[in-house]
Length: 434
Image 1 (tube, rainbow, N blue to C red):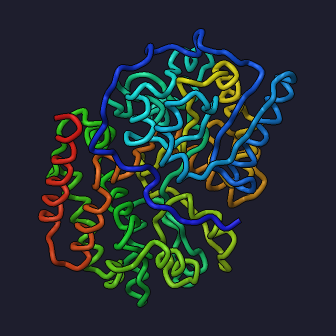
Image 2 (cartoon, rainbow, N blue to C red; image 1 turned 90 degrees about the vertical axis):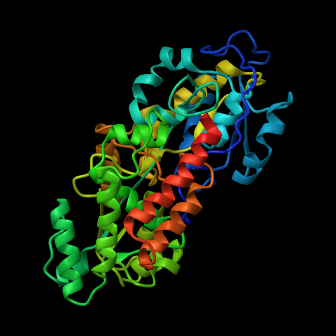
């Protein structure tokens, strides 16, 4: 199946998160269940997708274990749920369990408005807090203001996504270059390609890809404390710190050396992907959401690796299962969520090209799929998910795109770019936390 590209994986933080009185915190289903003979599931995955096939397996298992329960699976579009969730969930005719987008502006907002059931006790009872720990669990928890990363559990992720490096092995072989395993090797490969008249990096400055490359460099020079400050507002961010400065200067250096095409500022993600698929560029730094399309369309020998020597990587859990406050069958909903984390469901997800959060890469038979899944498993083993650069504040996506376009066009210095990012970030943060 051809998998379409997407923008940075989570909806950015909304500027307005109105906190209202919450329902009882920390609990599970409680005594609100009124119908334990029907389970209604909403999700927006196609039947052919990895997620759709995995959820179908979960439904099959659920029916076997709950033979007296009627299961109603309703497919919604992402746009329908995104647009109408607040209105729908204030009524009585709601699903028992629903796929929903993670992040402050989506799940966090609904949680802060009392529209989602807190699942903290259930997470402990069923061991979700052990299976989904560290950075993987960040998008599952929200505080009273709807900010992710602390507070109660309100959702459960089942799959993940991340940014890595796609390599054209035929071009590497043609120029006698080994697949890089260190950052120095990576830069040496860039230099060798350029010396041979080949622009090495497929890039796109008009959309998300260039920002993800910049963030990979920030993470290369930074650490988890920087991620927590940047993404979760634990402390103020020093926008001219060693990591921020080195990353932005390194990207500027790569632009000056011609490792990124001079017209990249005006190119889209689609332009970037097509150029890599066509064999024009030997390297593409982008997300796992490209994997299915690359597997379908590429005619040369290729591979996918993690960014060399990074212990932190752009990425996160995928969408999350949530239980609406007004759901009728909360205990059944919790059972269904638990089934989606079982190995037999997670391994279906992995085999079909998804990224399971609790699967076994050794069970995957397709070599390319197994390679990508193992790379993701390696990231999880190091608690290495660092989310996406546009997540912290509303409107930051457009600011990152604009500032980095200025870097490619050489109309701004690295210090000026960081000043532009700082101004937008701090203004957005003030709107959220004062």
